[in-house]
Image (tube, rainbow, N blue to C red; front, side):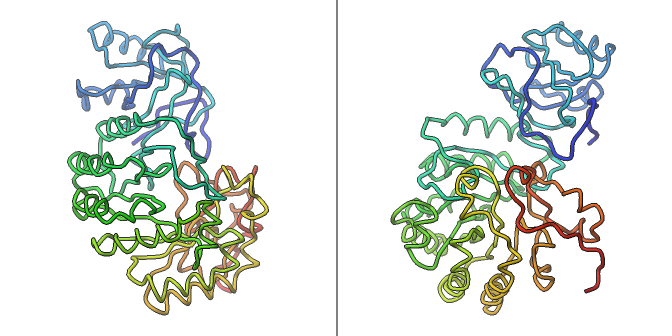
Length: 405
C-alpha cells in the first residue's frame, strides 16, 4: 500500500494529530482512501476519508460529495481549502496516511487518530481505560470515567478493515472489567474476523471466577490467547508492583482457570528493579508451578506513564543484570518453558541471550537511536521506544560492529 503524499514523514506514525479546521461532529471511524482507490473499494456502509494531493483531485472529490455521498470526508495537508463540515485540513508535518488505514476523527479534541494500519506487524483494539490495578510502571494510567463507547468504536474499526490481521490485540486498561460485554464482543469479533487470532492483555484478577473464564473460552472458540503479567513469586512482591492487595492470589487462580479451559497463556514479566531483584526466584516458581503456560516474556520497561513518576524503580541498566537474566532464562528453558525477551535492544543483552530476543515494539512506537545506523544487528533488533529521549534506554546504546565475538 503506497503512502498518500505529505510534506514530510518521520520514522514512526503519529498516533494522533491535530487537524487544522473544526469538526462539526463527535467521533467517527473512517477508512482512508484516494481518488484512484475509491472506485475499487467503495462500500456505502463505510465511512471514508479521501485524501487529496492536488486541486484536480479536490475537484473530483467535491463532485462526489455533490452527488450526495454523506459518508465521505475530504482531507489534505498539501492544498488549501476552506474549513468546513466535510473538508479537513490535516497537519502538514505529520506522517503520511496510507490507503486502507482506519482512522478515528474526534470532534471534541479536534484530532485524527490512526486506529489500524494493515502493514503494521502489531495491531490492537483499545477497549477501556479503566483498571483495577495501579502498576508502578503502567504505560496507560487508568481513569474511572465511563468509556463503554470504546467497545462500539472498536467494532466500527474492525468493520472498516480491508484485510483481516493475522493477530489482533485486545487491551486497555483492563478488558475483563467489561464483564459480560467481553465474551459477547469476542463472538462478534470472530464473526467479523474468522481467520484472526486474538490476544487479550489482562491482569487476570477477574479470571478467578471459573464460570466467567468458561464463558470467555466458549466465546473465543480456540481463537484467543491470554497475556497475563506476573511480577513476583510471592504476594508481597506482586501486590506491591501492581499496587493492589490480594492481586497475586487472584491472578494465580485466574491462571489455573485458564489452564482448566485449555487457554493459551503468555506470562509477562516487566523488568523493573523490584522484579529483577527477585527474578531468579520468580522464574524458578514458574518452572515448578506454572509449567503449563505457552511462554514467558521478559520485557524491558516502557518509559512512559507511571514509569516516569517511579523512575527510581523503573529505570534500570540491563547490562547490570546480565547474570540474573541468564539465570532466569536457564530456569525456564531447563524445564521446556519457551522464553522470549521483548522491548530490549540486542546491545542491552549478553550475546548468549540474543536468540531469545524478539523484535517486539509496536511499529508506531519503535525508533532507533542515531548510533544504531552502524549496527550490524539493527534489522534483527527490537530498537527503542519512541519516547526514550524523555525517559531512558534499557542500557547505554553500543552498536554491534561485527557478527562475530
